[in-house]
Length: 150
Image (cartoon, rainbow, N blue to C red; front, side, top):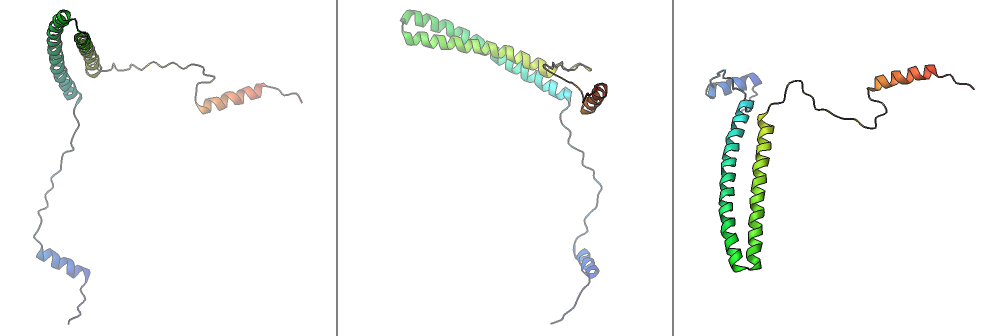
């Protein structure tokens, strides 16, 4: 048995000789960018028109179904028929409110905030509004003005 000690450089050179040469290309992968504001607005408009079209279609279908159910409930005079009719009317009203809320959500997404517009905030019951440095200066100036009689 041969006891041969090899140096680190010998081992690396043997590995490089036995392994295929990897091509070193300088390909810079482009960073994946998120969607732009225009893409978001375009998708929102597309989704809005799709949802609006289908909600309107469902509302028209429910109107026809309500008319049919109303005639059936009037003829049958059965409490269950009137219960079903009231549920159908409630569902139609819910679809109408969904249509309005869809419009509000679209406005939130599409409308860009005006530059320089700051959300107004109201502070109630404040004793002092400022930084701690300003508070210390105020207290120091007030303590200098107060004379203490002992």
